[in-house]
Length: 138
Image 1 (cartoon, rainbow, N blue to C red):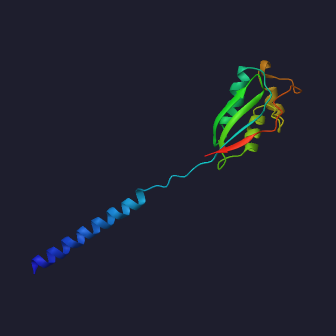
Image 2 (cartoon, helix red, strand yellow; image 1 turned 90 degrees about the vertical axis):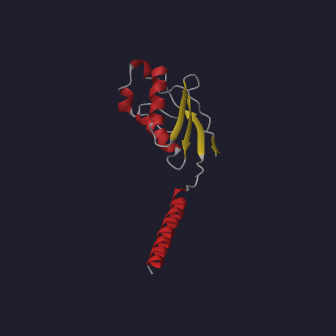
Image 3 (cartoon, rainbow, N blue to C red; image 1 turned 30 degrees about the vertical axis):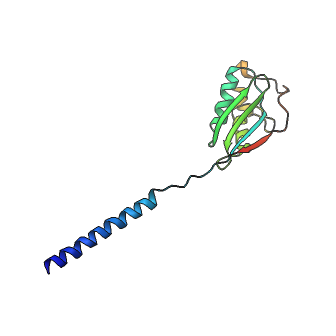
């Protein structure tokens, strides 16, 4: 009788262990989610290397932005971002809040006045006025 009880107990323990292992297998498997990255280019006024640093920092400060590169000569920024976390308007607004005009949003006057003298650009300055070209990549 003792052997039967011990055998049943042993089978029950083995059954519980294998159920737990199956559960672990199911919960440790993760689905890879494909993220759509959006790339765009738009105009931003500025003058120098300090402008470049401030403009890129403002853009990169937006959650979801993975890349920002401002071209001083063309007066335009190339941005890559996760469209599920942010949008182009948020990036324009962040740059404008740092004091720089974009081709869609005027810079904050207070922030502009706090920029170093070399960064206080001409508000009539030409910048890349092409419509922002947007492409999605996976």
